[in-house]
Image 1 (cartoon, rainbow, N blue to C red):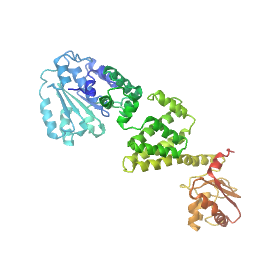
Image 2 (cartoon, helix red, strand yellow):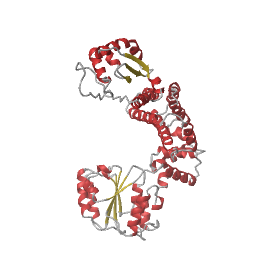
Image 3 (cartoon, rainbow, N blue to C red):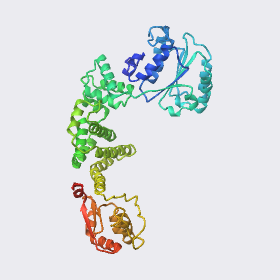
Length: 489
């Protein structure tokens, strides 16, 4: 019968465990110095070696040459533990044996001495699944453990374990396996199994495994089962239901170069191919992450292929990091929305529009900085600040920046809104560029729906301003992009 690669290459000794060097070193010292604790708790995501290391610990402790960090793998104890039929190493699935009666039965078993080994070792996987009553029943044994019993717990959700249990265990937090380490592990297995596979395909599998050794090896096994010839990156992408790297890069390039039509066209092609749009968006998000890191650090992340690094280097002179971060957040929120909706294509189309409009959103921030540099001290419209005292009528505006010019733009907008709500509504989202005794100039985005109305109704707004101030004043509507281009004073 065929043995799955994930089982065939399951680590059988400490040296075969990858990516957990700190934990291995600590356990080595404990075994060599004969300071073995009565209860261990291994925590971390799935497929990173928790249960495998528990079995290796059992071998190291019960090997006829033990305790030893190099179990012989030949004695009866080692062979029985490897085969999973040792009478002295009891493995329990916490998910299916989570009742208090199951733990009571276990407590009866641990009272008896081991049959042929030094210790009776109890391994409970997914221990967080035990019921509250079961944990309480287990607590008594952990408080006063028999000298011949060692508990090794494994969990993916340590926060669900009662603190009374946690405090009686030595806790080890397992790390996700990094992309380069997974890549090397997969490359080693491929060589041993004579699997012909491109490095790009191995890197893709390592990325999709998200830190899990078991998932990575299982994906490699699955890919080899479908394609016994040369495994290319394209074939692995097809297997995993991922968009072609070239298409993702083309979409990404169209976004950072502000070509919305091309972005939507490529999205249509992706959808027509029946690919998972959420996975597509996640792959696109990774492109944003990669370029942000390249532009921020000057170097490429270690988990990228030479082809990916070359592509990113071509985009080094594209939008600055602040814009990329804004776009990253937009896409991240979109991915969360995609997981809950049946209208994935529509959601992505709107998201692409938002990604292309992010430049204008950033322009607003830039213009505020520009105005501040000119000493105008513009404040956020959502947090208006009233000046001390008033001039004339109680609703007259008071300038916060220059005692010679008592005009508060946001207070003025509130007054106009009371007088003429439609006109006040037009002024809610504009940027005040100049607010002085003689001139008020506002900026608005060129594609804003209110731009035409502001220009058309500018005279009416000017009349209201003059009514409030009691004097003549110029009121101008200008283009946001034009203001951004002007050099700072």
